[in-house]
Image (cartoon, rainbow over all chains, first blue to last red; front, side, top):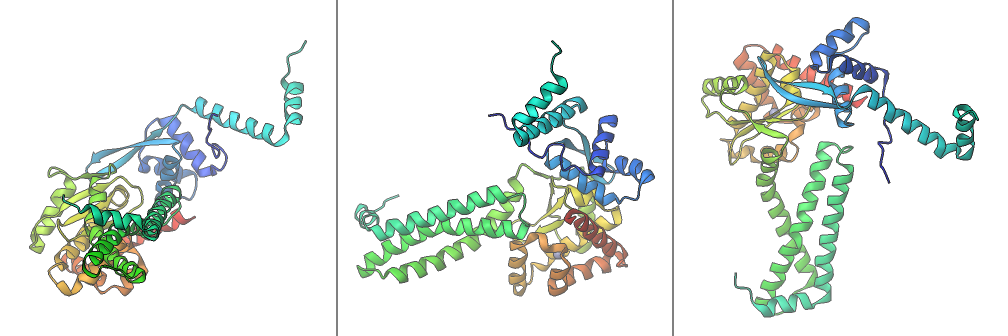
Length: 118
Length: 253
Ligand SMILES: [Zn+2]
């Protein structure tokens, strides 16, 4: 049985989604970079960006490496997968969930909605 | 190692002893399993508690075996309850002793920690502060964790541990305050009366910044005082603590 991450996509807060989105754009960013962009759009603390990036890392949605800098060390974050792959995984997950919950009704609906026209 | 065959035999032959040994190992494995499963959700103090209980129940069968063997030799018969209590005490002592070696060792050897080398800014900073305080520069380790905290181990091999989180979060002066605080802990070692406090800190290395502990703990206050004295202001230390507790607040949401 293939094990897909249950919480994938679901349970991501709006700020987490925004951070992930930014990482796909930039491909690589420090906590500071993301904070600098997001603080212009909304009221947000530097520490909460650090916390959320750590959570995304724990959920294996982002990767990080350690880089030396003037102050000592810092994290450089990057997305763990391409945006498209991630979206596909989220979609697959949601569809699977629907089928699990609604069974035949769901599959019948998918046939009706997306079924090949004969 | 020369082990007398008969002793092993008589010990293992007794079903009660087999039961005690098995039970202890089963409990140890259950605790380890619990630790591995709940690792992510547990707080650090709880994690350490589980680990120490695991070590205790692993040590216990050996202590029990040795005790049963020696008292068999000397007294020819052993009271079950007495054996259990005595080997329990021995196991606790061994666990505490092991914790002195094991905890620092785990941190040092963990793949998530690296030793900070002499050419790094942080090491040079540390060297400068240590010289000013008149102590030998301790080893500095960087832990690959985003959660900001720092702690030190003053026994065996003085070391200071910093997480990536605290290095990244604090401004240079604030980090200085933290380093001075930790160096002060290493300096405190000289007083054997403070041994219990050190022990306590070892058991809960994460509590360094916990307001509750620092209020209660004389040693924390002393370490803070050193940092304030060296910097001629409490501003940096206070803002460092402020930032750390802000992070903790965010992480709790
Ligand atoms: Zn302290």
